Length: 302
Image 1 (tube, one colour):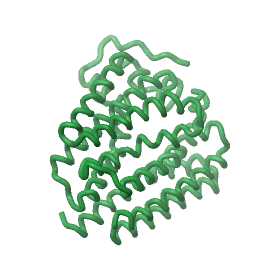
Image 2 (tube, one colour; image 1 turned 135 degrees about the vertical axis):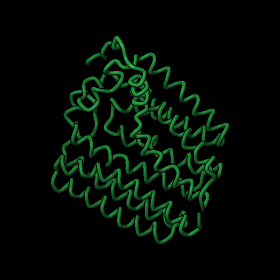
Image 3 (cartoon, helix red, strand yellow; image 1 turned 30 degrees about the vertical axis):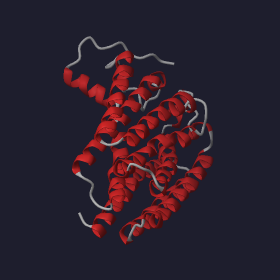
Image 4 (tube, helix red, strand yellow; image 1 turned 180 degrees about the vertical axis):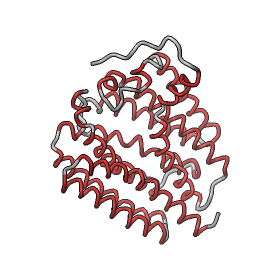
């Protein structure tokens, strides 16, 4: 395995701050937060207070950022091998490993006490549990040992819907659990589609991501199965959460598109088609949860 680079002799404060921000994987955090606020709107049956939204989003951002930074600390050896990740801060030496780990633990602690103090204890515990699951179950155990890594590890990425619901209600119910299932089953086809493009990277780093150890056909079959499961769960969510026409139509149409693109990957076994599925999968989640928010706000008012 390659080693990380030596720290640069000098680094401007702007670049140093940017390096620490990069440790948190902000693009992933953006996607997680897309699911949080609409879930809060469903739980509230309207628009929650701005203060609660801000407190939950800030706490969730810190919690996810801390988990992602620990992930980069642990994976710095394989990140150095993979083309997709070779420019991450711990590989280039922009941040030293000990500093990265200290940063990660610090913001995770801040996240817990922030959510406990400004939201509620249940939300704080859920955020911390998601971090621990992501670090110990996914990063330290499954990622390097099992093709089910992203399947089981995806539970951490589904936690924001539980946090958003509990922030409003201070409890959980079937509605957020179904939404949890939506994100849980969405994560594997989303990530496998990307991994098809970078399967050689994963193979060189000896990470058993499904497309790196199984055929494209076998991977595509699983992508279709999970896409169908996502579609079914989005339709189940409508009666469970008492959703209306706007959401139901969106779930039907978006689910058909997501499943159709997944079938396209199976039919062509093409990395370029897989990347189109990956790109659409991000739009899929964004539009689905936007429809959730719009549906509630239209029916119950701002």
